[in-house]
Length: 409
Image 1 (cartoon, rainbow, N blue to C red):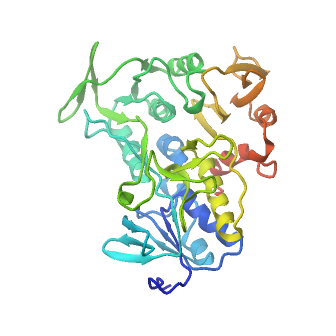
Image 2 (tube, helix red, strand yellow; image 1 turned 90 degrees about the horizontal axis):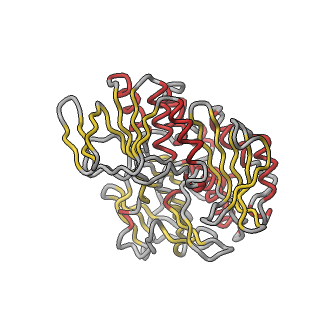
Image 3 (cartoon, rainbow, N blue to C red; image 1 turned 90 degrees about the vertical axis):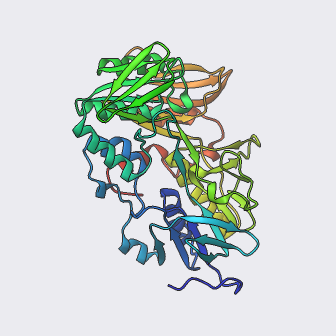
């Protein structure tokens, strides 16, 4: 496939970012009848892959790197999508509608940015591992086999998943958190005591309200300096969050503020859309820009943008949803959990190992959390208002299971 010459007016859809949301956008465009040439540009050499599996199946050793792939060359050929791996976008020119790649300009009639996010580095420990890419996960999994004592900095969802994987391989694990509670994403500290207990029962040394003040990196170990003492580690992992991958867009004219600012349809500028972790869409109901780093939101973004491009109309995205699994305990979270929220039991036993609870602000349900009760969780999600944001035709709770089975999307 030859890239369209700039200025000819010939349709050419360019997707920068071979992420799940980028690939899903290409698939959704074809499903809706789009016939224009599509070019999918990826910074990594790999085919698009299942990112949530990196901190779960790959680190646990239950999947090979190849099993994370969510498409193959034959599928891309069937979609008539030109795939350019190992190419990083350098700049964007809105006036000429071109993306610069390694010294060459690629013209577009429509651009979708799906570059995702990059992990924040631990400034005190430049050599600390992170888990964002397939190569990151493979390198950390190999390090598990060589080392015996790991310190993980960051007590959020990712830090807890890495801790669970390391313990499953028999490593001694210390998990450090700056805050005074383990925070599982949107649910915040509402489950902190349950998560603390789960980690402790499986041998994770959880230390909260701790900050790394400095470090000494030796040839065979790293010493972390804390306010209350020192920690020696064979291996240090940083899990302190991510930042949108937008450096190449500085000076482009796009509004950049914790991601690419978009309207409720994902449009950032005429002919330019953003999807996935890099996108900060204005919520149609509240008018507030929101950026959500969850797999389902990226899929919803992709489908909404494809519909908007092909038909000029689109459906609103659903409630934020994510899940994690720690030591065999599956935790599912849907919706939002404001500071004044109250959890009310829906099923099971809050003091046991299986329950579903609904979050309320006054009499309005805002979120649902499930602890080892997937079926009851699916039922409880109907408590949330505005069913248009959660279409019954798409069973959101089945998506992670589909990905986890290796069947793809």
